Image 1 (cartoon, helix red, strand yellow):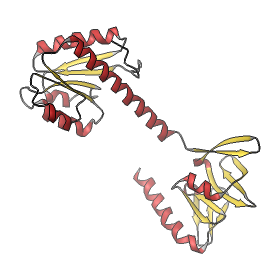
Image 2 (cartoon, helix red, strand yellow):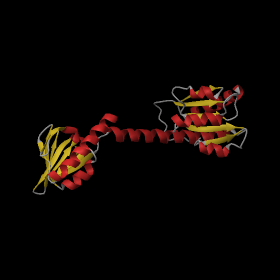
Image 3 (cartoon, one colour):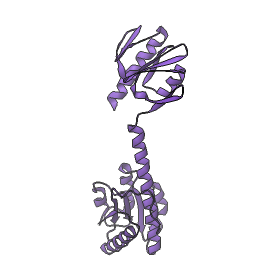
Image 4 (spheres, helix red, strand yellow):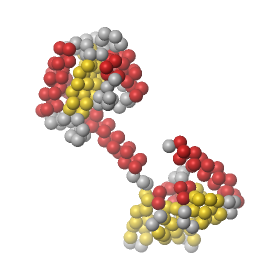
Length: 258
C-alpha cells in the first residue's frame, strides 16, 4: 500500500465504521487499523450500530464506512442528511446489494463496496479515501490562507520592488504620472496609473476623483466636496459623489453582515 499523500500527521484521521453487525465492525476495524499502521497514518477508528449514532458524532468523521441496510433508518437516508452539513466527508457505502449504486451518486459517495470484498480491495479504497481526505485538507488550508493573508501589490521604484498590502492603503493620488500611496506606515511614490491600482484594489476602494482613490475602511467623514480619512483628505467630484455615497453604504452593510 502506497503512502496516502497529503495526510497530515498532526491530527488523527477520524474513521467511523457504521454497521449493525458487530462482527463486521470488528473485522473492518482490525483490517483498517492494520493498513493505517503499515502506512504510518495516524487514525482514530470508531464503530457504531446505527445511522442515528453517526448523526450524533462530534466532530463528524473524516471518512465514513456506512452500511446501507440497517435496522431503523437505512444508510442512504442517513447519507442524505449528513450531506446537508458535511459536504466534504469521504463517504464509502458498504453493502451486500449492488442495486443502490446509482443512488450513491446522488449523495456524492466516494466509493461503493459490495460485500464480500477482498482485503486488497479494502486497502485500495482506504488508500484512495485517505488521499482524497488529504487533498481536501490542503484545499481548506489554502482557502484559509487566502482569507487571512491580505492581498498585496508590488510597487517598483527604480531597481527596488516593495510589497504593499492593499488593506494598508488609506488613499492614493496621482500627479505628473506618479502615484502617491498614503499608507498606514508612510507614503510611497512610484510611476504608474491610478486606473491600474483601482482595478487591483477591489470593491473596498472608490475612485472619488480622477486624481484620488480612497479606501472605505479609513473614511471618517465626508461632504459633497471632500472626504476626510484617518490620515489626510481626498477630493470628490460632483460626477462621482452619488456613486461614492451609494458604494460606501454598501461597504458598511457588508461589514455589518460579516
